[in-house]
Amino acid sequence: QVQLVESGGGSVQAGGSLRLSCAASGLTFNRYDMGWFRQAPGKEREFVSAISRSGGMILHADSVKGRFTITRDNAKNTVTLQMNRLKPEDTAVYYCAAQRGSSNIPPQTGYDYWGQGTQVTVSS
Image 1 (cartoon, rainbow, N blue to C red):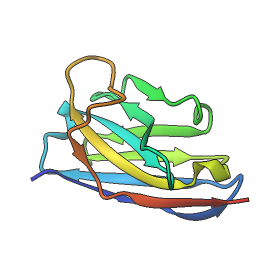
Image 2: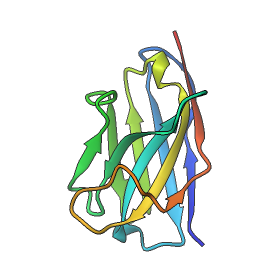
Image 3: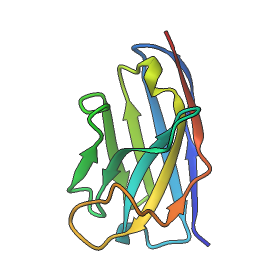
């Protein structure tokens, strides 16, 4: 079965950095667009970043543009979210997600598979 396992969450002060990783198994990784989402307490889950199957197309939410970077390694079946200049409003549980690719643009919704999430806490 498909498994997505996130790691790298933790606590950091505002302005700091964290690197999240997601290891995928049970799927042909290079056929799947990959995304990161987050959910803060009392809020709905929201899109953060996505990367296409080849890595050639990347999308970011406006709130993280210029601060977050998404990459993937199709040889290692991993996707990474580098988060810099973190803000308290970035505090959330971050989820990795996978969607069978069907276009050149990675989706922001409709993902099929989800990880269990990893907590990111940014203090002011």
